[in-house]
Length: 212
Image (cartoon, rainbow, N blue to C red; front, side, top):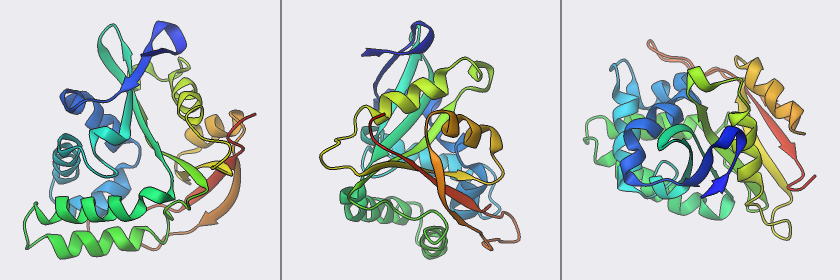
């Protein structure tokens, strides 16, 4: 465990963290998760995320996440990786999606690939931060900043040219936090992705050096 803000600690996630961590992961992009995984089925996105988290593999698995803990209680979660993981993550996601049922799988996969035009997968030289979530009652206490800084500290300056993340244009509070931490907007990708049930907002890609 590593100390972070306010007496909290950060550690690698475990499967047992799923009940607390999955809602935080979902909170990092609910509209996008619902567009891909729910398609009108209430709670379907969180059910998928829970199954994938417990499975452990891929972008959504517990092995890819860290959690911030206060007194044994998970209060924040996040993940970081680079483009070398893209193929393995894609294969893991396909397997996890197929496990949800063949009738739904083709649509989920198609929508997931469409989202990658708005939220581009990282290159090998990019240390990419995602799934950043803090419990609502703990926001404004420095936990989000501490989580981001702890994740960036895991970057390898010899390998990673930049630390990068994407933020929805509908989330100015998060964008302001990232700007205070040294990130700057380098691209904006509008979105026309919408279904009868959900719409994906445009996103801004933000970057900073892996070290100050």
